[in-house]
Amino acid sequence: MTSLSAKIESHGNAVDMLRNSQIGMYVYPVVAPEYTNWRNEQAAWRKSAVLFDQTHHMDELIVEGPDAEAFLAYVGINAFGNFNLKRAKHFVPVTPAGHVIGDMIIFRERMDKFILVGRAPTANWVKFQAAIGTWKVRLFHDPRSNSRPDGERVLRTHYRFQIQGPDAPAIFEKINGGPVADIPFFHVDWINVGSKKVQALRHGMAGAPGLEIWGPYDDKHYIQSTIQQAARDIGVDLVQVGSRAYSTNTLESGWIPSPLPGIYTGDGMMQEYRDWLGADSYEAAGSIGGSFVSKEISDYYVNPFELGYGFYIGWKKENFIGKDALLKLKDAPNRQKVTFEWNREDVLKVIASGLEQGTPFKWIDFPQPNYASSSADMVMQGDKMVGMSMFNGYSYNERCFLSLGVVAADVKIGDVLTLKWGEPEPTGKTSTEPHQQTEIRVRVSATPYAKDARENYADSWRTKAD
Image (tube, rainbow, N blue to C red; front, side, top):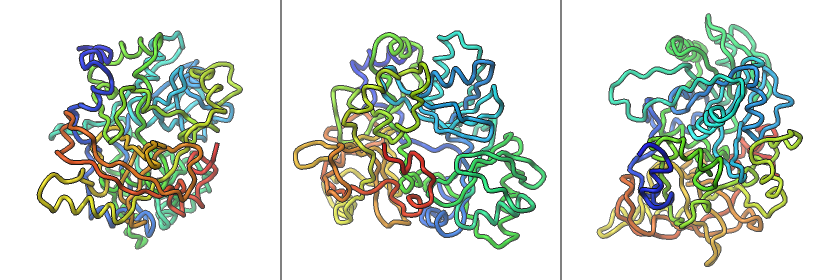
């Protein structure tokens, strides 16, 4: 098999292919799972300061050339009118039918050069559009590091770090050699890190102050050691965060990181895309986990309005992929993004079953049961499915288990619903053990869940209602 199309055909349909994927657990590569312990690492982004090493788990795609802006404006839903050299955007492409493919953070380095950072589905889609078009653009793709490098040397184009937390500003001032200019949310400016000048994005994963910095990979060790030494010099407890805790910060901030790419259906361009994608691509090798099983792969798709991305859409652009479909969806009764707060007693019941004889309930791994590339657990109101839980995990800061997902438009904050936990029948996934299904009560809660994130984020996809 050489293409995604051939692989789907060999399995009969996309749902069976993804639910029986042999890829195993989703792995954040290279970065150690824990540097101290994941509980203290989670707590540190609220109480002191943390250092996230974001170098390895994301694809990087450079797009440059005379048509770079026009090309990306056509591929993504975003408006580009206010996108100058000191801005970053949350870049979101959709299919012609309006289904989200993925997202990346896009930076403008020059008027004719952009860097996109994020998961593979968006990078693959952008590469395909460049391949079938006549745009005057050049692309360079640096895929994420190997999930299991097994001792092989790992090289990237850029390092990428984020420092955040209430004590982060003091570290920035120390490494900069003086006060840092006030950088607005999702804007970019230059700061010093010792003898190096680096670009810095004002960002924050869980509501606390933060900057994301990046530069040539050869500088990685110097940058990291300079940051850590600066924290020691001023007496700040800078906690390095491992991959176990890192993946959970989005539960507090409200970003759903891995919606299923809506690319498995559709004729014309979409069929051509599936023929173009390799049989070893993310889209072909990835997996779906959870209690929701549908014969139609499109039942797992989401649109931008459901994820809170509707206000990104550049309606004034003459043309972009999916515009006609989004115009029809705009006033439809779209689902809404929410946080589900899992019932304490029901979670304890699931954990206790693993200490008893017989077939237990599906294991809840802490801090995150990350056993599939995309998750889809049924959320019920009585006998009716009213939503889907898509990303789950435990927050030590909130002392509760949370998940992010979508629910019907008429579901209200505070409603208590039922999440079906566990898969209804065995699959070929190597990341699932024999288990039985059960029910977990969930309370529909605000997004972002963390009070700091709700109050301190600028008007953005996390807080803005469509």
